[in-house]
Length: 152
Image (cartoon, rainbow, N blue to C red):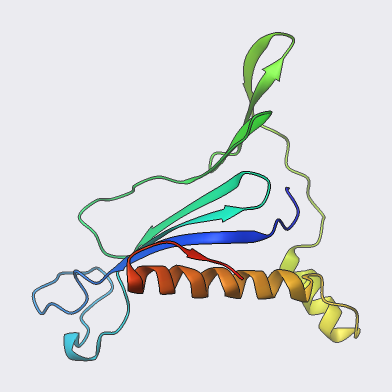
């Protein structure tokens, strides 16, 4: 949608408020709180070149059913996922529409699988994979030190 902009800075926070407690009720069943090492909440804001910002939030354990979904906001249009809606200006008015989904196109997984089977180049360039790793490293470093960090 926007290509692969270069990440420049990240701020992250993680929390473990439920997983290491003995009295937590969870529909997934019981676990051993002594061995529990996973955060139950994480959030991050990533700043990219070109005045782009992405905010991520996730929680597998919380006292709320659903805190939101996936959405994109831009100066020319916006979009939500589930339901898939596009929001933009047309002929001097703001309009919302549900685009028709194309079928028969290979998924990213199928493209990756085909690349492995047929010894083709990866459909995801190595630079993009490296950028994602740098982003997550920066988010965890930021969560550890309590301030934003540059992504080098």
